[in-house]
Length: 280
Length: 65
Image (cartoon, chains in turn red, cyan):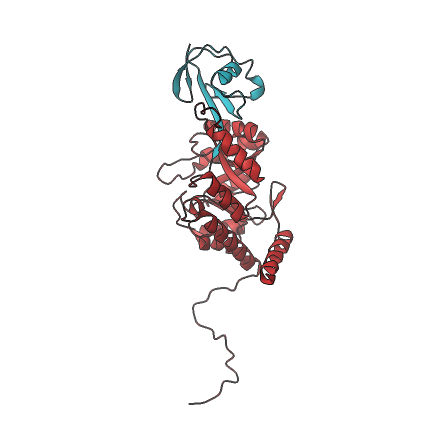
């Protein structure tokens, strides 16, 4: 029991001394969790609680036809579940392929969810779900001017990132790998460059994360947070996997703050060489 | 008159978007609306007429990644 309490205290004090801010809003958890593809609403609820996340992503979709009497419409029932959990929502523009679609979806989301936050996706390619970075920058500019706080789903391209920042983005969310692929960090070098290039901007690895070690690796690179969905939702035990991700993020962040050693090519003995007995 | 609601052909007598939402059972639902690709804010639904051939989108909060 003491060990549990000690762990909890360490976690909360580290969160308090190492806060993360998105557009002036402080959060303690470095995990942003998607709400799609869970086996049931109950399992979604369990996973959100187990993850400790404070921010979940949501979308806007066509409301289903009239429900049977006494039953709630699908969207209404989902929304009351999320509100009861007391987490912040980050609406996305998933599936939008044009600037107009993304901007209109963002406007509708702002009215519906009552938040200026938007996870901006403008998809340019169906097989990889790669962002259309040209449309993304244009939509980010329009939305930022209109008072939105844009979280752009982008690539690790530094020039695009510069343009997003010029457009008003105060957060950047490069992909680790294609959405839902679970491949992890495809381009650690590119992600490291991005971290070095934008030391003052919150950076979130969004998409492609498959297992907790991928999330820990992102944190060890100095990333501020990780956004994931499929890796938890499609796991055999989503709540357990959510907890595993929370621990990996915490471990990776602590490791980054502890200043890891550099890798080297040759061995270096860790036990002192001096004082070794001559026995042979 | 014939309109399209959420991608499906529909027949309505509703004069305004507010009336249409009521007719479809969405009167108390939390939804966002668009007519012919342009968003219509909740406050403007009463004064937004429905006309023949309109394409109406009625969107709700849903799961997302």
